[in-house]
Length: 402
Image (tube, rainbow, N blue to C red; front, side, top):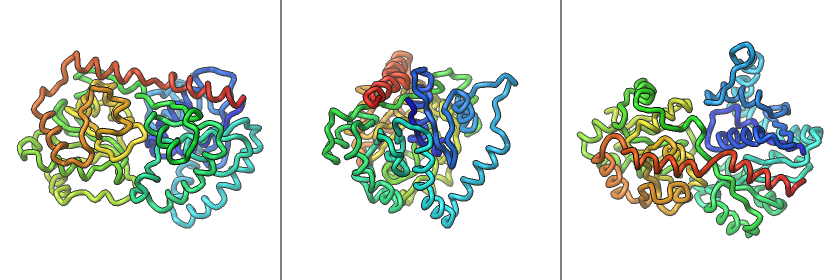
């Protein structure tokens, strides 16, 4: 069986979808079934094998990078130049318009030369008709529930999804919450939707005080003496509520317990409170971007509390990653994140500023380092989610197409 995927997102800054694609595809390749995966990047298709994932791991500073027989795995200078040229071009409006205009035609023509049996649409829907059955992956329906939090361009891209769903014999998603959402919004048979949840990558695990302290020193942070939030900077992450809540914490407590927000630029007006500028200038609120997985692991393990106040999540990967590192979590109540944390997280009404302030103050009042029993419970809960387990669910779906 030959399955096609679009791998373009793996060559860009890694977000939740990119990490899901990377880790799940890698687990599928490692399962060594009689399936061949072929991926399309900018213009060319390539067989997806261990070498491919090693290259992506190095380029994205993942933990899974392997060495070659020469002792070091390197991307060729030609590949780097080509990737940089493509990325630079599509960031210019005129070139982006041209690229998007020709992409569907290029995709359709090239896909039909690959002898595909199935196209696995990891980014909701394929760029165009691949000429074979499509298995769409739908992470969340935030563009339906919160259209105001998405740019018009994104909403236009999602318009064909209803037709893709109607034609699909199966749909893949990442949580029971989103499974119910898809069935409700698209009137799609829920029994034909299967869940293959994300998991924490192997790098997200406790490595101890010495390694963690070293890992966060460059950020001028002290282990157990900062709060952490992780996610793309966009309106539905609800950072305005978190920052408003943090601004109500006593000045002395903020001075010794900064709030660190890790995430790349997203879209939309974050509508951050007026206090944001002053908190940043004082060093009490810090925004970090371009953080590697190894650095993020240290940031997770060293945090007093990881906070995720999102208005809407399809899953909530920072929750499972933080728990895998043994770090306490507070997240929005009545969301998909409840499925991850069970009864081990602090659940807060997403828009209740006072309640978030209370959760922060409660964390500040606790010991700097979580006790062994509580940490082991968090780690064990996170271990319920595994990439190879999710790969098994996907392989079962593939067999229905065979």
